[in-house]
Image 1 (tube, chains in turn red, purple):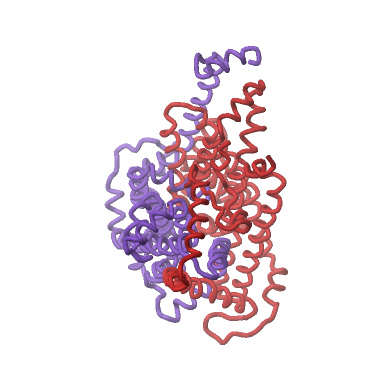
Image 2 (cartoon, helix red, strand yellow):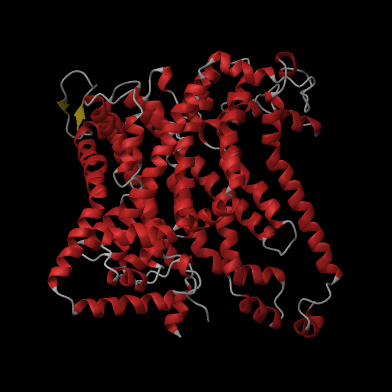
Length: 345
Length: 291
């Protein structure tokens, strides 16, 4: 079996067995790579420590930019941000130590809960819907049809338009009177809502907009689908399995690692939603699209509540960590890795 | 279906049954319908950008602009320093792209090829930075750049990428180099090439696919970045296309035709790049998605 064809569980592998990183680039070269590595190790053992020292020196020299960057642009700001989250500061006057007050205040802040609620609802609906839609697209494209590359291009193109450009375009499309969406709804005799101007429809509008850019995950699914060994389908056919059985017993289980990956990325991304809310609605109407990061941004750069915003940033970090850890934990129950069977056999 | 399964096994790709034909037709129709839905925003964008002031608010809305009003595009240049925005965006995008390809490539090479104590811990550290939301470091970085007088310059948006840039790109380079047989390096070493020389002369030339992938992702990231420019740039002369667009929208609320013309000009370079390098693009997304 070509079990080394695709391997999605990179982090697990990195943490577990070092240097056993059969990645997608080396679909065939997996074993070969490991051999060369051990060879390299052996030949190296015989070399003099002088060369070892030279190699070490070069290693640190080459990664020096990253080390400097990590210290200056990640570690020191992280520590500073942690300290700031215990302070009261507005960029100008001298900072005051508050202890945990920023955090306790946040837990009594209605807007904080509102922003958390908006972001959570958006995530819960938009992430799974995007996953399902992109999966369906990939399935449709994987059915051995002609003109695949044309459809693939068409479905991917929206993903090229992101951030401000997409937000402005959709803002105009959602225009209740002159926008294209209500125009089309009108063809079917439906009177469209006020979308981003209506507090009940603003968040659904942003969710609909997010479904436009499913192209990237579609491409990832598609490549995954094409990597499923055809023997599996042939075996299923011999056993007389129908289309739906094949889908649920073979395709879906084989795809769980990619679904898992897209889920993690989707959750992390959706919790950091900012541009759409800032450009299209500025959080309104009546805070119905007041996303977490928008509130954070306003506190940091509009209200100059530096400490408060820093505390928000850390809470966001914890939320993302907990969610990711949860998905990773749960993955044992539903994500299927080919290696598992390989080892069991 | 089950009755015919034996003959089917023998000539699997032979004649197609009517049921298959019907399902294929259905797939096509579905795909075409979905493509139309997904293309509507583009059509609307282009059509709106060519409408006259009167047509943009016509009732019922028109699909095809009549007359075609190219003047909207000229108007954009008259209303805002569009070329300035474009220039600023290009400077950031190109420099960050160069930095990401070269520096991430170099760091990725070190992590994949050289051995040194502490390497694994450092690599885990690098990977873990991918999880960190940028909002955590955003405020201290702003304070730092403010203190050294870099706020309202393009520097905060460019310089960090020269210091290791993004962990994702380093990771991608490392993965790519790990697939290249190490015997290649050893051959170079026998020929008297040093570590850096091996990287520049042996590995980089055969790393085109990953270099293009990283370059494209870097391009997209800088071109569409909104929060960074929003935080660091105040003077309109330093604006990028993205925040310029937002400014344009707030100043010309009623002129959706101008705004859409601006939007077309902002999206066009990305689309051109995509069609020029479509294959690498798709490959790149698959690589990053499959990490």
